[in-house]
Amino acid sequence: HFLCLCVGVYYRKTLPAPMISRCDYSVWGILKKCIGMELSKITMPIVLNEPLSFLQRMSEYMEHTHLIHKACTLSDSIDRMQVVAAFAVSSVASQWDRTGKPFNPLLGETYELTREDEGYRLISEQVSHHPPISAFHAQSLKQEFEFHGSIYPKLKFWGKSVEAEPKGTMTLELLKRKEAFTWTNPLCCVHNIIMGKLWIEQYGTVEIVNHHTGDRCVLNFKPCGMFGKELHKNRVMKCMYSVAPKVYEANKKKAEKGDAKKNKPEQSAGKQETEDMPGVQETVSVITGSALLWRITPRPAHSEEMYNFTGFTITLNELEPGMERLLAPTDCRLRPDIRAMENGDLASVEKDRLEEKQRAARKECSKDEEEWSTRWFRLGTNPHTGAQDWLYTGGYFDRNYTDCPNLY
Ligand code: CLR
Image (tube, rainbow, N blue to C red; front, side, top):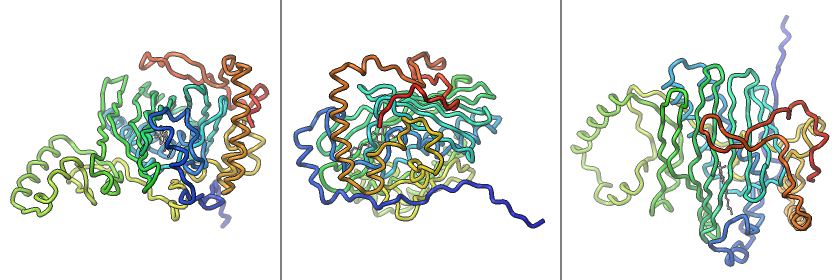
């Protein structure tokens, strides 16, 4: 009668080896010739990498799947929009301090993420090499939602920084409501590539459209401005609240009155600073009557020695016993270079990279790439936006992988 069954899945909590430090390597030596070039044409020093494929990095959206589940339960469309906005924001916040460059996926590479405990499964595929395009499709195990999209990370090397423009649309479909939301991702810039402390900045406008109701939600991510260098630490996104416009206006008026009375010392010292960087605050003042939509999950202990990964990220490249038999042979968990980096073996990564280059050169000669047809996705029309998009053709989970290419 007192039998206790613990049904659960245990995922790893740390990486197998400590992170490879970039201090010992001269990045400048390699990069000084490359200013202004498109990043895909530059071989970046491997110490700037993180032991993940871009397909895995893209899957990090799924860390916040609970928000989609929540959206499915809400009966009011404005409430649903708020939670979908929180979902989009939470993925931006996950990127904080994540300055490592994920490995470029090989053409035909896939990544599967099945999380029965979270009620979803995801499949992604590298569908194009030049330009690099990654497509993904996630579905809930109870047919409640589908979340899909494709990303072409257009990278520009500016000397001191690398700017990424993630081209492609995200589509979230709440199946029971026949409702679809779409949006695009903000821009992303990694600073101090050559020297100094690496830091990441995300900026731009994200417009979420509910195609069923016509509702639109506009999120504005502000760039750090010229004082960002010193102050970017204060801009970590920590939480997101919603408040009724009337309550907000009333509170703003009250605050303005209060401010006029107070004699704030920092106002004279740094007017420019506050103008350039709205939101430079250590703490967020919460308006009474507002509701918490999302709060950041703290990074795990020693995250800074693990490429600043979140707890979720740490699990993404885990190869559990028995998994090898199940996975498609193209799954990036089977990539030897990423595995070597994860294990702290930089020499092997370099060796693999050389071999890969030679293989790629051979491929280019035989024009293999032109004949390449994608396995799990096809180019079609997104029914909600009417734009060209990569759509899942289905069947991955039937687990018939006989005609998959041999990549590794
Ligand atoms: C952010 C979340 C978006 C999709 C997306 C697209 C491009 C990605 C970006 C994310 C994260 C940061 C990123 C970028 C491409 C290049 C850049 C991985 C996942 C890295 C950090 C650039 C590193 C440059 C090195 C030379 C340091 O939904």
